[in-house]
Length: 376
Image 1 (cartoon, rainbow, N blue to C red):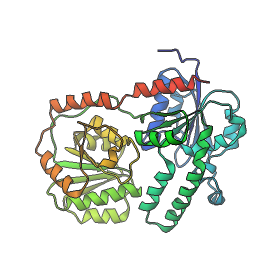
Image 2: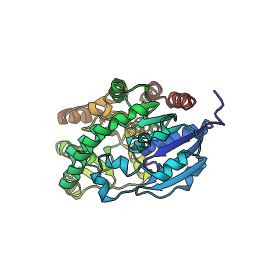
Image 3: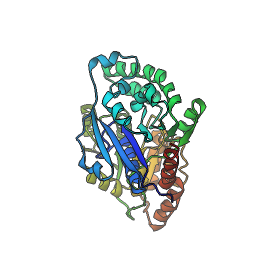
């Protein structure tokens, strides 16, 4: 292993990546942690967006800088996407120009940097957390609020027009095979780098329980739509379904109250959610949006028993032996009936452990990133 103790890296994060409690910030935080453990001196730059400053980040970073996100309403009328122009910050640019260290931009959100000529010779790497205009297109379809839907549709067009700025990056890190194929057709030096997460060892409780769990941030339309679908599915099954997540909308709360075998766990803390995942007999994850490796899937595979998914949840992933793929309500009901009487035993746990070593290798991801930042 090469010595990286003299290697510095700027990481520009669209939000404060701690606590690591949702999708992309989990990826960012555990990437910071992995690089720090390999000796990289990280200079973290965070935009403030509804989260507190974190002293804990200082234990992994050489320096931590915070910047106010400029969320003026007038920014909505900018030709540059709102998620980008509200983070195009002069103070950040000045800090990055104090040295010639490589720069990792977390998401298209932070790529305003690439529009400035003074950075054209820097080693700038972009982590593409997804294909942003496709992501916003799905969000727009799921959104019920007319004003939010209009904003999202406008952002789709702006993101499509802005994305070619990635030609100016030295490398692009795609999160899934599907995204890798998309970016590779358009840009040079594209690599696939899996998502980082908290778990690297399978830790599953042998045995069984009497409930199925769905979890997700229930304030997001994609997730509460999936929850509604599952509530409707379980109306016709005599099996307990628990739905856990942050800030469920009132219409979902009311829907759940009307179904006797469905229970809502509203905004559980991290430990409660972890316990729910570990003790569920089946974890079920469904989505209408194929966006590569979802971190909640990794959480379930490392810590949960049986796992049901639909094909969009595992699009482009080789999950042979890890999940049961079910794509309609009848298939879900049949799988639940088949799996509830089965015990998740030591043999199943060992099989999961072997399959996860093939499926997910975070050391390879870190090796790749170290190679790219060495090309300064």
